[in-house]
Length: 112
Length: 113
Image (cartoon, rainbow over all chains, first blue to last red; front, top):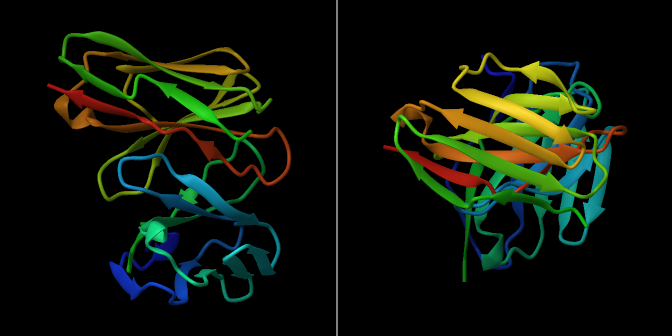
């Protein structure tokens, strides 16, 4: 069983929809949680990172962490065609210099 | 500024060639990373440098040789690669404290013939 599970999709939604992306994990030692967006043939771009359980909001993006359920989510409001990309969840046990464990990535397409 | 730069953007090399990938960051980050990414897969960690010292080597074949000349630069020397080494090579960096969120560069797309 993988330490981090992420539905690979693909996920296709109409413009303006609310998108929910999810990851579950099995290792309770994970303390830091990140979401990356990766456009085709580009490097991953850090969208959100968080430490504690709860919500963190940044513009149209909300990251949610539930450590008791070992479940993290990324919500995208008012989705735009420019949001079409692969979204990767990532988590680590420690601080800087620690390895990240990635989910497999969810491919999202937002249709105009 | 959260920019990590990588050169070259693309590289084609034969199995007998020697080449180097370069990565640079000016964010004052003290941890730097090399990843390999195959199509439709997440990045796979290769090496971690912390305060310019190699701290993690994920059992990478010796045909890949990392080097950290100073706190802003990271190199990956390539020698006698195989076609299966063709991939996107990503560099990342993170602060020396805090949650360690990693900032990635655009990558070098490598093709080994």
